[in-house]
Image (cartoon, rainbow, N blue to C red; front, side, top):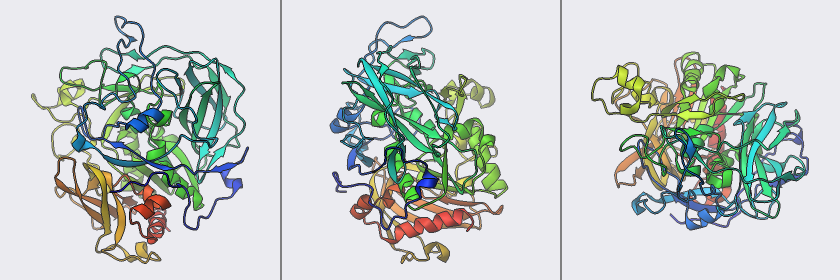
Length: 558
């Protein structure tokens, strides 16, 4: 499929901008999100389990922040990683070419105030992380910053239909290059352990949203720190940022839940069994995967005036009872890792009580069940996961001797391949579930029997194309699991896995017996289909936006 680099990103068809009053102060003015489409590498699974492993192209590597060289030697129990490889692309030399496809993202290097002009490099790093994934107004944002520059500044931006500056950059703070990665020899978890060197109260005037702190070394390099501001008031739609997912894939310092360059926690297991939030994100120069997985959908929602508030999968996995109940909760892109409380919350409100809708404009959602550990003043800082049952003491105690399946996938709890009583397959809630990694883009077509109300005003009919938006990873209906009378296939595509196998990608719309409503689009790229340049290059019809609006109205019970 031809790529389309260098094309303006955020011109929406007939946008209806939300008012500044609802979106909050414009401080120093709102800057159009006029990034450029580019192409990074999409790589397939490695290590234990399923899912892609991010690897950047040469151009992407030049733009990506990297962890500094590790220093020192390991202590008896916890130590700094000696000989840590170049973590800009730790697996790039070993990835098989058949695993490579394309994925879109926003070009975040450029001349706009929110963009990076001098991305962090291994030789001249400017990197940081926050003490929490999200905050409420009145909380204090704290950043642990490491830079080789003599000083640094922090500027805050909010992502929406525009990128809004939240005010002048901070006064210059003293710069210090903090220590290299620390490694837990038991799990091969890597963390930074830096001092918090910057703090800023969250004003009550800042609206709920996804934010980026841009950290700029004086005369040096720059990097991002993402965070979310939540709201204490209910909204029509609650948008979830997938922090747990980005942490699982984060390779800063030498390991992730997919790879380890600092040793194996068990023989034959070449990935960490825990990851830490106490380290910068490597992807997108510190932004995690916000640009690739979340920004297009957020921009479209806010550009069309939807009443939205924001939270993270982390917060819903720690204490979902603290979240004011929306009419519908929305995920975009990729949210593979959940804590059990998040799944419990959705099962209760969507599946059982029917007082909330669930929109998955995403694929491979809620596959792994993670454990949140290592409490701090702002919440747990460690995400633990044994993907292989042989290494999970709890599974070993309850499963038959010799069992070697997945330990903590929702679909295979408490143990065993298949969907036995006690297991919680994603399809029981979503109507579809993760099927395959699919490099490239495939033609999604409307299925027969789509409810007429969903097609109203779209000019679309069953069999019509929605464009080449099926891909990345895709979901499908597993025939071994019973469906429900209110299930309607929305769209399907014939796709090909990286191994050359033909598999279906499928989207589902559900009306549950409880009255709960579910939309599961089954692809990474539904949100990108709402971005006009991507849409034009991938054959997305004009009625696609109206279809998405109809799906949102369905979820909210309109």
